[in-house]
Image (cartoon, rainbow, N blue to C red):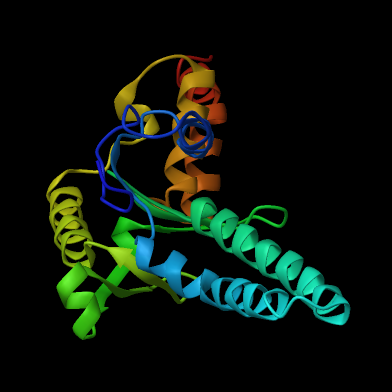
Length: 232
């Protein structure tokens, strides 16, 4: 499979990517697609390094002492430029799950953000001439949460991402949101479910606190009311 194509599941990913994706998923969350930046981004990110290598080779070809002193640091700097471009390219991921869109990028200083599907207000794509020919482009996802919007560049298959977000958003809207009490289970399981729904943006901070209090104290409150009614 060509680098940059959106894939379903983890089996088509490198082991390092599999570990990163697994660490980002939460309980009861289904991975739909993994998107990587298109290889064209690597060419543009490393273009300066390639030009530097060519210049270093031309300078070294002159053959006298000072030219080698100039060519050596230029070549080293160009190689570092290319290596950094490759590492950054490989570090960028976009995950689409049945509940959210997750963005992660960076190597030493990694940045991860997410937008719950229920908060996605708009998805727009932009493709230039080369982007249309090679099927990559710029994607802007506007949300109603604190993040505001996320912009991803050089994404392979931008139209597919927009279609999949639309499909999953419609599916989530037609599916009733589960609650901790409706799923049953032990007290710990209900609290874990509430925390999961809160993280996914399905319930607000106030709703989370009220539901947690109901789970923790609801039975006790009902028992107290029963004692009062059954008292002398």
